[in-house]
Image 1 (tube, chains in turn green, blue):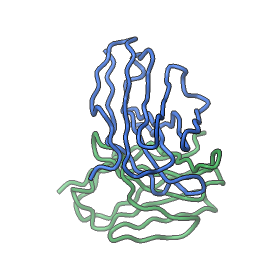
Image 2 (cartoon, chains in turn cyan, green; image 1 turned 90 degrees about the vertical axis):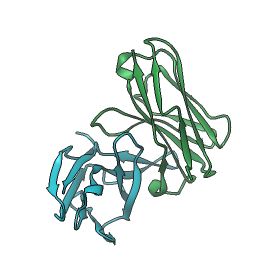
Image 3 (tube, helix red, strand yellow; image 1 turned 60 degrees about the horizontal axis):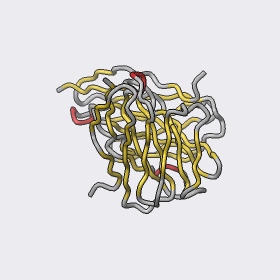
Image 4 (cartoon, chains in turn blue, cyan; image 1 turned 60 degrees about the vertical axis):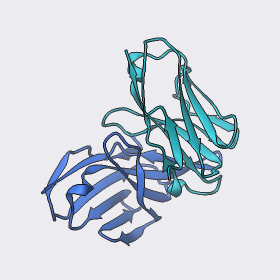
Length: 113
Length: 115
């Protein structure tokens, strides 16, 4: 079993739709939960992060963490064609004093006009 | 302004011919990472440095080596590239130990093709 599971998609939605992206994980030591966005042929860029359980909102984006279920979600409201990208979840575990992010494989999102 | 710069963006190398990928950063971060990302797969950590302290992942092949001559630069050396090493190689940085990598910054990546 992989530490972080993420459905690769692709997920195709019309412009304006609410998008739900999800990851599950197995390592209960994870404390920081991050979402990265990766455009084609580019490096990932941090979208937002959450510490422990709870919700965090940033504009059209909301991140949710449910540690009891080992399940995290990213919601995108009023999705735009410019949101089309691969979304990677990542989680932090300690390793020799440095936090090391462990990534999911990413979900490809396509928002069509 | 680019903060983590990888060169080259695209690299074509011959099977078995050594190749070096480079990464530089202007953030003065203590931690630098090298990830390998194959198509539709999760970035896979190869190694990371905390300052000059090198940490190799257990399943990183011996074919992959790394050097960090100073805080700003880090290199990935592939001694004898095979066809299976074709991938995007991502360099990232973050603050020192005890600081979660929630502020990890990635470069644009180097796409390696092996012919």
